[in-house]
Image (tube, rainbow, N blue to C red; front, side, top):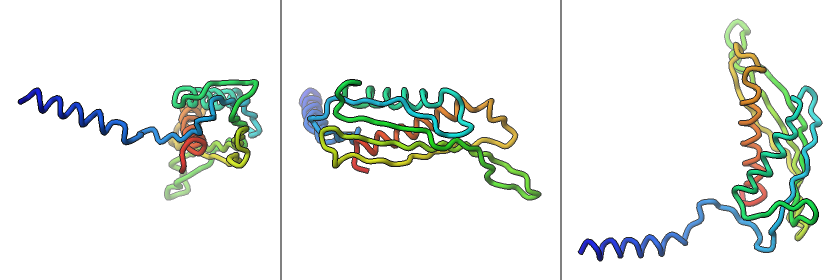
Length: 165
């Protein structure tokens, strides 16, 4: 009896495992290759190398989370990006005009080029921010903040390109 229940459960699990896709990725089957051009750093005050962090992060995200193969010469889709804003602002003022939180905001401009279907291309800005205490020096959290912002922006770019959000 236990064996019948186990086999029945296994059969149901096998049947229903193909019904849902948790990744939500929707890539045209004819699209096989991608290219991410080196980001440009057009933001004043941005840290050196931020363009490399964003470029390599997007390349890696696509490589790991899709079936696409990187191709510099003849890609089916391309991403071209630039860092357009890097700024720290004061947020959440306290009584007595003391600032409690600072915010690092990075804004990128991304162009998605679909060489198989030009109508599917787009260009959009993707901003994100990282809040930190006013008693914290930006230099002490800058690497962590940039990485968190880069990861989120790359997630947003990936979702825009490969899901229907």
